[in-house]
Length: 424
Image 1: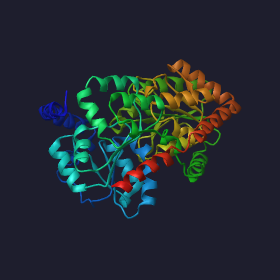
Image 2: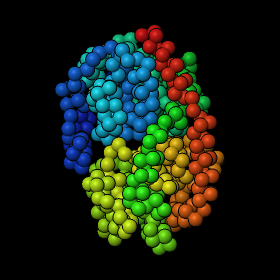
Image 3: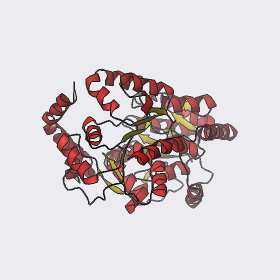
Image 4: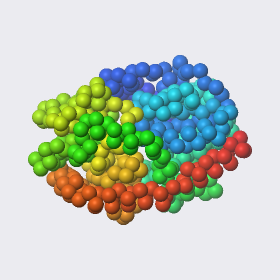
Protein backbone atom coordinates (compact mmCIF):
# COMPACT_ATOMS: atom_id res chain seq x y z
CA UNK A 1 0.00 0.00 0.00
CA UNK A 2 1.37 3.43 -0.98
CA UNK A 3 0.44 6.82 0.44
CA UNK A 4 -2.28 7.49 -2.16
CA UNK A 5 -4.11 4.28 -1.30
CA UNK A 6 -3.58 4.92 2.42
CA UNK A 7 -5.16 8.39 2.04
CA UNK A 8 -8.12 6.98 0.10
CA UNK A 9 -8.76 4.34 2.76
CA UNK A 10 -8.47 6.97 5.49
CA UNK A 11 -11.16 9.08 3.79
CA UNK A 12 -13.41 6.05 3.38
CA UNK A 13 -12.97 5.31 7.06
CA UNK A 14 -14.02 8.82 8.16
CA UNK A 15 -17.59 7.78 9.15
CA UNK A 16 -16.13 5.01 11.34
CA UNK A 17 -13.56 7.40 12.82
CA UNK A 18 -16.28 9.91 13.65
CA UNK A 19 -18.55 7.26 15.18
CA UNK A 20 -15.67 5.95 17.27
CA UNK A 21 -14.96 9.49 18.47
CA UNK A 22 -18.62 9.86 19.50
CA UNK A 23 -18.50 6.49 21.28
CA UNK A 24 -15.41 7.56 23.20
CA UNK A 25 -17.10 10.87 24.03
CA UNK A 26 -20.04 8.91 25.45
CA UNK A 27 -17.65 6.97 27.71
CA UNK A 28 -15.35 9.94 28.46
CA UNK A 29 -17.04 13.34 27.82
CA UNK A 30 -13.67 15.08 27.31
CA UNK A 31 -13.44 13.39 23.88
CA UNK A 32 -16.52 15.35 22.84
CA UNK A 33 -14.78 18.69 23.30
CA UNK A 34 -12.61 20.47 20.69
CA UNK A 35 -13.59 17.99 17.95
CA UNK A 36 -12.97 20.65 15.31
CA UNK A 37 -9.25 20.70 16.13
CA UNK A 38 -9.04 17.07 15.00
CA UNK A 39 -10.02 18.24 11.52
CA UNK A 40 -7.90 21.45 11.62
CA UNK A 41 -11.03 23.56 12.16
CA UNK A 42 -11.34 26.07 14.98
CA UNK A 43 -7.68 25.87 15.86
CA UNK A 44 -6.55 28.29 18.58
CA UNK A 45 -4.41 31.30 17.75
CA UNK A 46 -0.92 29.97 17.04
CA UNK A 47 2.27 31.95 16.58
CA UNK A 48 4.19 30.60 13.59
CA UNK A 49 7.86 29.90 13.05
CA UNK A 50 8.70 27.89 16.16
CA UNK A 51 9.13 24.26 17.21
CA UNK A 52 6.30 21.74 17.01
CA UNK A 53 6.36 18.70 19.32
CA UNK A 54 3.83 15.89 19.01
CA UNK A 55 3.26 13.60 22.02
CA UNK A 56 0.35 11.34 21.17
CA UNK A 57 -0.99 10.53 24.64
CA UNK A 58 -0.32 10.73 28.37
CA UNK A 59 2.80 8.55 28.40
CA UNK A 60 4.50 10.44 25.60
CA UNK A 61 3.50 13.77 27.16
CA UNK A 62 5.26 12.78 30.38
CA UNK A 63 8.32 11.60 28.44
CA UNK A 64 8.42 14.84 26.42
CA UNK A 65 8.30 17.12 29.48
CA UNK A 66 12.08 17.35 30.10
CA UNK A 67 12.67 18.01 26.38
CA UNK A 68 10.04 20.76 26.32
CA UNK A 69 11.54 22.40 29.40
CA UNK A 70 15.00 22.43 27.84
CA UNK A 71 13.73 23.88 24.55
CA UNK A 72 11.84 26.61 26.42
CA UNK A 73 15.03 27.44 28.28
CA UNK A 74 17.28 27.39 25.21
CA UNK A 75 14.94 29.11 22.76
CA UNK A 76 12.76 31.65 24.59
CA UNK A 77 12.44 33.52 21.28
CA UNK A 78 10.65 30.61 19.57
CA UNK A 79 7.03 29.58 20.18
CA UNK A 80 6.79 25.93 21.27
CA UNK A 81 3.64 24.12 20.14
CA UNK A 82 2.76 20.78 21.72
CA UNK A 83 0.08 18.56 20.19
CA UNK A 84 -1.46 15.30 21.36
CA UNK A 85 -4.43 13.06 20.57
CA UNK A 86 -6.00 12.28 23.97
CA UNK A 87 -7.71 14.34 26.70
CA UNK A 88 -5.39 12.91 29.38
CA UNK A 89 -2.35 13.98 27.37
CA UNK A 90 -3.88 17.41 26.82
CA UNK A 91 -4.62 17.81 30.52
CA UNK A 92 -1.07 16.87 31.52
CA UNK A 93 0.49 19.25 28.95
CA UNK A 94 -1.61 22.16 30.17
CA UNK A 95 -0.96 21.38 33.84
CA UNK A 96 2.79 21.17 33.27
CA UNK A 97 3.29 24.18 31.00
CA UNK A 98 0.20 26.39 30.98
CA UNK A 99 0.58 29.38 28.69
CA UNK A 100 4.33 28.87 28.29
CA UNK A 101 3.51 26.71 25.26
CA UNK A 102 0.87 26.63 22.53
CA UNK A 103 -1.38 23.58 22.51
CA UNK A 104 -4.05 21.86 20.45
CA UNK A 105 -5.01 18.39 19.28
CA UNK A 106 -3.16 17.13 16.21
CA UNK A 107 -5.53 16.94 13.23
CA UNK A 108 -6.12 13.52 11.71
CA UNK A 109 -3.69 12.44 9.00
CA UNK A 110 -5.81 13.74 6.11
CA UNK A 111 -3.84 15.75 3.50
CA UNK A 112 -6.16 18.77 3.60
CA UNK A 113 -6.17 18.82 7.42
CA UNK A 114 -2.39 18.39 7.52
CA UNK A 115 -1.90 21.24 5.04
CA UNK A 116 -4.20 23.59 6.97
CA UNK A 117 -2.43 22.80 10.25
CA UNK A 118 1.12 23.13 8.84
CA UNK A 119 0.27 26.36 7.04
CA UNK A 120 -1.08 27.82 10.27
CA UNK A 121 1.94 26.72 12.29
CA UNK A 122 4.81 26.92 9.75
CA UNK A 123 7.30 25.39 12.23
CA UNK A 124 11.06 25.55 11.79
CA UNK A 125 11.33 22.06 13.27
CA UNK A 126 8.90 19.20 13.94
CA UNK A 127 9.60 16.64 16.68
CA UNK A 128 7.55 13.45 17.00
CA UNK A 129 7.84 11.53 20.26
CA UNK A 130 8.53 7.79 20.17
CA UNK A 131 6.83 6.07 17.18
CA UNK A 132 3.71 8.06 16.34
CA UNK A 133 4.25 8.12 12.58
CA UNK A 134 1.68 9.78 10.30
CA UNK A 135 2.66 9.62 6.58
CA UNK A 136 0.72 12.68 5.40
CA UNK A 137 1.87 14.94 8.24
CA UNK A 138 5.48 13.93 7.64
CA UNK A 139 5.12 14.42 3.87
CA UNK A 140 3.49 17.84 4.34
CA UNK A 141 6.52 18.95 6.37
CA UNK A 142 8.98 17.41 3.91
CA UNK A 143 7.39 19.23 0.95
CA UNK A 144 7.77 22.54 2.78
CA UNK A 145 11.38 21.90 3.80
CA UNK A 146 10.53 21.50 7.50
CA UNK A 147 12.88 18.96 9.11
CA UNK A 148 11.13 16.21 11.06
CA UNK A 149 12.83 14.37 13.95
CA UNK A 150 11.62 11.19 15.62
CA UNK A 151 12.68 11.53 19.26
CA UNK A 152 13.12 8.81 21.87
CA UNK A 153 12.17 6.39 19.11
CA UNK A 154 11.42 2.78 19.89
CA UNK A 155 10.48 -0.06 17.56
CA UNK A 156 9.83 -3.58 18.78
CA UNK A 157 10.32 -6.62 16.57
CA UNK A 158 6.55 -7.04 16.38
CA UNK A 159 6.01 -3.42 15.29
CA UNK A 160 8.83 -3.69 12.76
CA UNK A 161 7.17 -6.73 11.18
CA UNK A 162 3.91 -4.78 10.96
CA UNK A 163 5.59 -1.82 9.24
CA UNK A 164 7.41 -4.17 6.86
CA UNK A 165 4.10 -5.49 5.54
CA UNK A 166 3.39 -1.96 4.21
CA UNK A 167 6.89 -1.14 2.96
CA UNK A 168 5.65 0.94 0.00
CA UNK A 169 4.08 3.29 2.54
CA UNK A 170 6.57 3.16 5.40
CA UNK A 171 9.89 3.20 3.52
CA UNK A 172 9.28 6.57 1.76
CA UNK A 173 7.91 8.01 5.00
CA UNK A 174 10.98 6.99 7.03
CA UNK A 175 13.26 8.30 4.28
CA UNK A 176 11.69 11.75 4.74
CA UNK A 177 12.78 11.94 8.40
CA UNK A 178 15.90 14.02 9.05
CA UNK A 179 16.70 12.51 12.46
CA UNK A 180 15.66 9.26 14.12
CA UNK A 181 16.99 9.32 17.68
CA UNK A 182 16.52 5.75 18.88
CA UNK A 183 16.85 4.21 22.31
CA UNK A 184 18.95 1.13 21.40
CA UNK A 185 21.17 -0.19 18.61
CA UNK A 186 18.71 -3.04 17.93
CA UNK A 187 15.99 -0.48 17.22
CA UNK A 188 18.38 1.50 15.02
CA UNK A 189 18.91 -1.60 12.86
CA UNK A 190 15.17 -2.13 12.55
CA UNK A 191 14.62 1.44 11.34
CA UNK A 192 17.44 1.13 8.80
CA UNK A 193 16.03 -2.16 7.52
CA UNK A 194 12.64 -0.50 7.01
CA UNK A 195 14.05 2.29 4.82
CA UNK A 196 15.38 5.02 7.08
CA UNK A 197 18.51 6.74 5.83
CA UNK A 198 21.47 5.35 7.75
CA UNK A 199 23.08 8.75 8.33
CA UNK A 200 19.86 10.00 9.97
CA UNK A 201 19.63 7.23 12.57
CA UNK A 202 21.39 7.89 15.89
CA UNK A 203 21.41 5.87 19.12
CA UNK A 204 20.82 8.43 21.87
CA UNK A 205 19.23 6.27 24.60
CA UNK A 206 15.95 6.89 26.37
CA UNK A 207 15.22 10.38 27.66
CA UNK A 208 12.92 8.78 30.23
CA UNK A 209 16.08 8.16 32.29
CA UNK A 210 16.59 11.94 32.48
CA UNK A 211 13.49 12.34 34.59
CA UNK A 212 13.89 15.05 37.22
CA UNK A 213 11.94 14.86 40.46
CA UNK A 214 10.99 18.01 42.39
CA UNK A 215 12.71 17.80 45.79
CA UNK A 216 9.53 19.18 47.38
CA UNK A 217 7.50 16.16 46.27
CA UNK A 218 8.72 13.65 48.91
CA UNK A 219 8.45 16.32 51.61
CA UNK A 220 4.85 17.16 50.70
CA UNK A 221 4.01 13.46 50.54
CA UNK A 222 5.52 12.86 53.98
CA UNK A 223 3.54 15.73 55.44
CA UNK A 224 0.29 14.38 54.01
CA UNK A 225 0.94 10.86 55.33
CA UNK A 226 1.60 12.35 58.75
CA UNK A 227 -1.66 14.31 58.54
CA UNK A 228 -3.43 11.05 57.69
CA UNK A 229 -1.81 9.39 60.71
CA UNK A 230 -0.33 6.94 58.21
CA UNK A 231 3.42 7.56 58.60
CA UNK A 232 3.92 4.01 59.92
CA UNK A 233 1.23 2.27 57.85
CA UNK A 234 2.29 -0.04 54.98
CA UNK A 235 1.22 1.91 51.88
CA UNK A 236 1.50 0.61 48.32
CA UNK A 237 0.31 1.88 44.98
CA UNK A 238 -1.08 0.10 41.92
CA UNK A 239 -0.69 2.75 39.23
CA UNK A 240 -1.90 3.13 35.64
CA UNK A 241 -4.08 0.05 35.90
CA UNK A 242 -6.16 -1.31 33.03
CA UNK A 243 -9.35 -3.37 33.09
CA UNK A 244 -8.58 -6.73 34.68
CA UNK A 245 -5.73 -5.40 36.81
CA UNK A 246 -7.79 -3.67 39.49
CA UNK A 247 -9.28 -7.01 40.49
CA UNK A 248 -5.80 -8.53 40.86
CA UNK A 249 -4.59 -5.60 42.98
CA UNK A 250 -7.66 -5.73 45.22
CA UNK A 251 -7.40 -9.50 45.68
CA UNK A 252 -3.75 -9.16 46.72
CA UNK A 253 -4.66 -6.27 49.02
CA UNK A 254 -7.38 -8.33 50.71
CA UNK A 255 -4.78 -11.00 51.54
CA UNK A 256 -2.38 -8.35 52.81
CA UNK A 257 -5.08 -6.86 55.04
CA UNK A 258 -5.59 -10.26 56.66
CA UNK A 259 -1.98 -9.97 57.91
CA UNK A 260 -1.58 -6.20 58.18
CA UNK A 261 -4.99 -4.70 58.89
CA UNK A 262 -3.60 -1.14 58.61
CA UNK A 263 -2.36 -1.60 55.02
CA UNK A 264 -3.43 1.07 52.52
CA UNK A 265 -3.67 0.65 48.74
CA UNK A 266 -3.55 3.69 46.43
CA UNK A 267 -5.32 2.50 43.27
CA UNK A 268 -4.86 4.68 40.17
CA UNK A 269 -6.68 3.67 36.95
CA UNK A 270 -4.91 4.69 33.75
CA UNK A 271 -7.94 6.23 32.03
CA UNK A 272 -10.34 8.78 33.58
CA UNK A 273 -13.41 7.11 32.05
CA UNK A 274 -12.77 4.15 34.39
CA UNK A 275 -12.58 6.16 37.62
CA UNK A 276 -16.22 5.71 38.61
CA UNK A 277 -16.27 2.07 37.51
CA UNK A 278 -13.23 1.23 39.67
CA UNK A 279 -14.68 3.13 42.65
CA UNK A 280 -17.85 1.05 42.36
CA UNK A 281 -15.73 -2.11 42.12
CA UNK A 282 -13.93 -1.22 45.36
CA UNK A 283 -17.20 -0.59 47.19
CA UNK A 284 -18.82 -3.72 45.75
CA UNK A 285 -15.85 -5.79 46.95
CA UNK A 286 -16.38 -4.43 50.45
CA UNK A 287 -13.34 -2.16 50.76
CA UNK A 288 -13.47 1.07 52.73
CA UNK A 289 -12.58 3.35 49.81
CA UNK A 290 -12.22 7.13 49.52
CA UNK A 291 -11.68 9.25 46.43
CA UNK A 292 -8.80 11.66 46.01
CA UNK A 293 -10.81 13.89 43.64
CA UNK A 294 -13.39 14.95 46.23
CA UNK A 295 -10.93 15.40 49.07
CA UNK A 296 -12.33 12.64 51.27
CA UNK A 297 -9.95 12.19 54.22
CA UNK A 298 -7.88 9.04 54.61
CA UNK A 299 -8.68 7.74 58.09
CA UNK A 300 -7.48 4.83 60.19
CA UNK A 301 -10.15 2.54 58.71
CA UNK A 302 -9.55 3.53 55.08
CA UNK A 303 -8.31 0.55 53.06
CA UNK A 304 -8.19 1.99 49.51
CA UNK A 305 -7.52 5.50 48.22
CA UNK A 306 -8.73 5.87 44.64
CA UNK A 307 -6.38 8.16 42.72
CA UNK A 308 -9.06 9.61 40.43
CA UNK A 309 -7.26 12.85 39.57
CA UNK A 310 -5.14 13.97 36.62
CA UNK A 311 -1.58 15.25 36.79
CA UNK A 312 -0.87 13.84 40.26
CA UNK A 313 0.69 10.45 39.54
CA UNK A 314 4.20 11.38 40.68
CA UNK A 315 2.81 12.72 43.96
CA UNK A 316 0.77 9.56 44.49
CA UNK A 317 3.90 7.48 43.85
CA UNK A 318 5.70 9.60 46.45
CA UNK A 319 3.00 8.75 49.02
CA UNK A 320 3.63 5.01 48.71
CA UNK A 321 6.32 2.67 50.02
CA UNK A 322 6.11 0.17 47.12
CA UNK A 323 4.90 0.61 43.53
CA UNK A 324 3.17 -1.77 41.13
CA UNK A 325 3.19 -0.30 37.60
CA UNK A 326 0.14 -1.39 35.63
CA UNK A 327 -0.48 -2.18 32.00
CA UNK A 328 1.70 -5.22 32.67
CA UNK A 329 -0.59 -7.76 34.35
CA UNK A 330 -2.59 -7.71 31.12
CA UNK A 331 -1.05 -7.79 27.64
CA UNK A 332 -0.82 -4.01 27.26
CA UNK A 333 2.99 -3.72 27.26
CA UNK A 334 3.48 -1.86 30.52
CA UNK A 335 3.94 1.77 31.50
CA UNK A 336 6.81 3.96 32.67
CA UNK A 337 8.79 2.12 35.36
CA UNK A 338 11.24 4.97 35.83
CA UNK A 339 8.90 7.43 37.55
CA UNK A 340 8.58 5.38 40.75
CA UNK A 341 12.25 4.32 40.43
CA UNK A 342 13.28 8.00 40.42
CA UNK A 343 11.33 8.45 43.67
CA UNK A 344 13.20 5.56 45.31
CA UNK A 345 10.31 3.07 45.29
CA UNK A 346 10.90 -0.69 44.98
CA UNK A 347 9.25 -1.79 41.74
CA UNK A 348 6.65 -4.47 41.00
CA UNK A 349 5.09 -5.25 37.63
CA UNK A 350 3.33 -7.95 35.70
CA UNK A 351 5.10 -10.01 33.02
CA UNK A 352 3.81 -8.05 29.99
CA UNK A 353 6.49 -5.38 29.47
CA UNK A 354 7.07 -5.50 25.71
CA UNK A 355 6.91 -1.69 25.45
CA UNK A 356 9.80 -1.35 27.91
CA UNK A 357 11.93 -4.44 27.32
CA UNK A 358 15.32 -2.74 27.61
CA UNK A 359 14.41 -0.63 30.65
CA UNK A 360 12.76 -3.60 32.37
CA UNK A 361 15.78 -5.82 31.67
CA UNK A 362 18.14 -3.30 33.26
CA UNK A 363 15.96 -2.81 36.33
CA UNK A 364 15.47 -6.56 36.70
CA UNK A 365 19.17 -7.25 36.25
CA UNK A 366 20.12 -4.66 38.86
CA UNK A 367 17.85 -6.33 41.39
CA UNK A 368 15.01 -3.84 41.62
CA UNK A 369 12.11 -4.97 39.43
CA UNK A 370 10.12 -7.89 40.79
CA UNK A 371 7.67 -9.43 38.30
CA UNK A 372 4.44 -11.12 39.39
CA UNK A 373 1.78 -12.89 37.36
CA UNK A 374 -1.30 -12.96 39.58
CA UNK A 375 -2.80 -11.93 42.92
CA UNK A 376 -1.09 -14.73 44.82
CA UNK A 377 2.38 -13.76 43.58
CA UNK A 378 1.64 -10.07 44.09
CA UNK A 379 0.59 -10.67 47.69
CA UNK A 380 3.72 -12.75 48.34
CA UNK A 381 5.92 -9.95 46.95
CA UNK A 382 4.16 -7.27 49.01
CA UNK A 383 4.34 -9.33 52.18
CA UNK A 384 8.04 -10.04 51.67
CA UNK A 385 9.03 -6.44 50.98
CA UNK A 386 6.98 -4.99 53.83
CA UNK A 387 8.49 -7.58 56.18
CA UNK A 388 12.07 -6.76 55.10
CA UNK A 389 12.60 -2.97 54.89
CA UNK A 390 16.36 -3.45 54.30
CA UNK A 391 15.63 -5.52 51.17
CA UNK A 392 13.13 -2.91 50.00
CA UNK A 393 15.76 -0.18 50.43
CA UNK A 394 18.36 -2.26 48.56
CA UNK A 395 15.98 -2.70 45.63
CA UNK A 396 15.14 1.01 45.60
CA UNK A 397 18.84 1.95 45.52
CA UNK A 398 19.40 -0.50 42.66
CA UNK A 399 16.68 1.23 40.65
CA UNK A 400 18.18 4.64 41.31
CA UNK A 401 21.54 3.29 40.17
CA UNK A 402 20.07 2.20 36.83
CA UNK A 403 18.51 5.62 36.41
CA UNK A 404 21.78 7.47 37.06
CA UNK A 405 23.85 5.15 34.85
CA UNK A 406 21.67 5.82 31.81
CA UNK A 407 21.21 9.57 32.01
CA UNK A 408 22.49 11.78 29.20
CA UNK A 409 20.07 10.81 26.42
CA UNK A 410 18.36 14.20 26.61
CA UNK A 411 21.62 16.05 25.97
CA UNK A 412 22.38 13.80 22.97
CA UNK A 413 18.88 14.31 21.56
CA UNK A 414 19.08 18.08 22.00
CA UNK A 415 22.41 18.16 20.16
CA UNK A 416 20.74 16.53 17.16
CA UNK A 417 17.77 18.89 17.27
CA UNK A 418 20.06 21.92 17.49
CA UNK A 419 21.80 20.78 14.30
CA UNK A 420 18.46 20.64 12.50
CA UNK A 421 17.44 24.06 13.82
CA UNK A 422 20.74 25.56 12.66
CA UNK A 423 20.03 24.31 9.11
CA UNK A 424 16.38 25.40 9.09
